[in-house]
Length: 448
Ligand SMILES: C[S@@+](CC[C@H](N)C(=O)[O-])C[C@H]1O[C@@H](n2cnc3c(N)ncnc32)[C@H](O)[C@@H]1O
Image 1: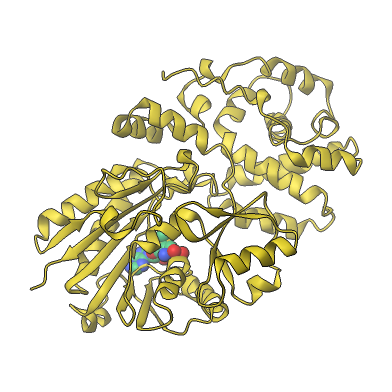
Image 2 (image 1 turned 30 degrees about the vertical axis):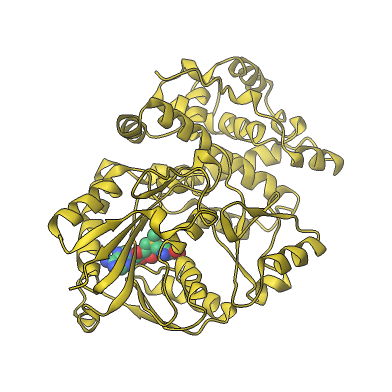
């Protein structure tokens, strides 16, 4: 077992919301424990994305007040992050384990004592027993809160120390990052406008268009958001989009555009010139991209739903694109701070399916790159299987492509400060505190 993490969760500091809730005079309500237990029960049986299930639960329970909802949501996210440990600890005790799970989740998410201590005394006796258990004494999953297969892979590929720091980092929530839409606003102006509204944001080092919010302000309803002056986008996603480095007038094919997070960042770099073809197999995701594109003021897009990466309608683009971006479907394990439930939806089997798809997508997408053009391969995974292994295998079978070092593309001042500049491919780790976990490799096709 790796070094002493000393992460007994009872030592977690209380959050700012604690005092806020106390000021509001929260009552001792067993109802809230029971609500959290109900939602935990539901999520434990649900295999889809947790955020959708939580939103639906709130819709179905209008009786939950605006003061309770954030507390319930935080407790449930805390449960998702610590689920392996909470489940393990909650096995002991009397009555339904889900109630103890709810209490622990409320406690660790910083809910005030009168909330989590409500209900049976026996549960509180159990709580005071688990308070002294050190995470270091638990098995791999309960200690790291990661699936064993994944933790072992991480340790094998990057060493125990990295696996430990990663597991610690993804137990916290990610910050809220904004990308200034430079087509409509400057970073300085947006910073001033948000500050005027009482929304505190700070510049992000090495990311000229990036701003990081202090806390979790609700930014989606602000006029500056509605006007398209910024998008919500993790700093890592912004850096990998910058690696595309399109020139004005380029033809860019965003092969897996989804709801267009990176497409919009690339479009802004092109200052609304040239053309971006945004492809995806999911019409639903491309539909979500449309209002974002409209807000952004960018009009250099064309969207197209494809059947798969081998869709013959793509033949007309063979050898034509200056830049092809493949932000491939991946395990998403680099984004566990935002999507903690992903870890329960991945397995060695799903990893094998994903890597097969990634290989196929990169091979097909490469056909669209014109001589001297570039393919940028991106994931939000931290595993070598989905990253270096895919890129190296591709380079071996496609000698007309060569790897360009990420530091050749991103200038100093536009780089994540903590990323390893001696690596050829860009790797971002959540524990570095700069962004979610991302990977990107720039592959340049030879001139002839
Ligand atoms: C990581 S997400 C893309 C996220 C998006 N680029 C962004 O920045 O918001 C991967 C996307 O690949 C799409 N996809 C899956 N299989 C595909 C395929 N064979 N060809 C193209 N896109 C595919 C998925 O529907 C999903 O939207």
